[in-house]
Length: 321
Image (cartoon, rainbow, N blue to C red; front, side, top):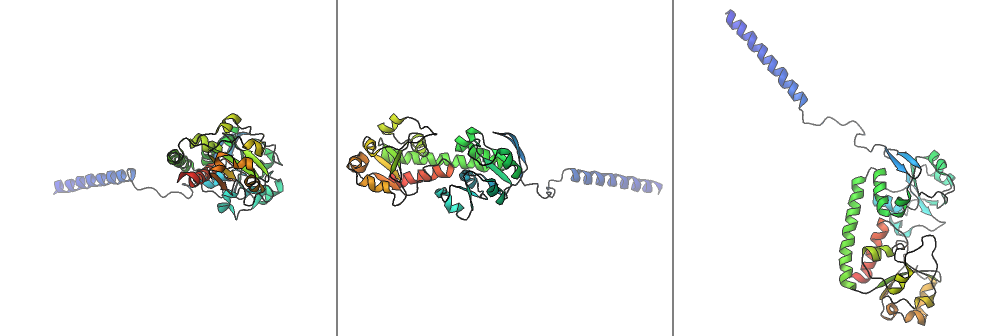
């Protein structure tokens, strides 16, 4: 009898010990995730080097202002709190997404900035064009001044904005998709144009601006899509970003391009001037009916992901089908 009691006690002790071990093991190896604290999946603030030194970007900024660089914001799925404008002039190619967004004047008057109550401001590295100083804007909201290379290179801008907005994966996907678009378009145009050349002319009022090989969308046309340059474009060399001089109709007579992309608002005087000019009508593109008119010059006169995508679509619609 005593042996049975001792055995039962020993057995109970062993079972109890095993239960403790099992419970402990289950507690340590539970594969089900713990409930996430509120906000764990939200962005966290990040400190970045900028043109004005290190800047801490707030987490989950919602009211973002990046005047003239709304292209990058929209590409990443972010609608700005205000859009860049000069008077009534805006970046028309973005208006489908920004038509209901209020404007802010190009020189960023401090009172206007304040009225939009931003919680993040993104500016260019050159502050001279703004009414306020960096410190003025930084007092209104955390302000990031892009480095020169970020302002100049829209791909760099997409990557930088991706970091700022906590959308790095989306930024890389955008860039990858764009390269695929370029590659496909390049193949289509090689087949459609072969060795034929093309040029871009912007008619503003009654003045004409011939795009050098790296001027705005011409860089997409020549460097990315591989379209051949006519001799006159080669002679112009690279553009001086600080200056842009009109070209005379007489000089345009030297333009031996097989195709011309003519950028002009509907009813622009320059279109009629060219149609009435025997000099212009004698150029290869005009004689062969290969002057392709686009009434929205805005994406052609900007650099950005969306601008470049729209330019590619324009070129394909004109000569790539």
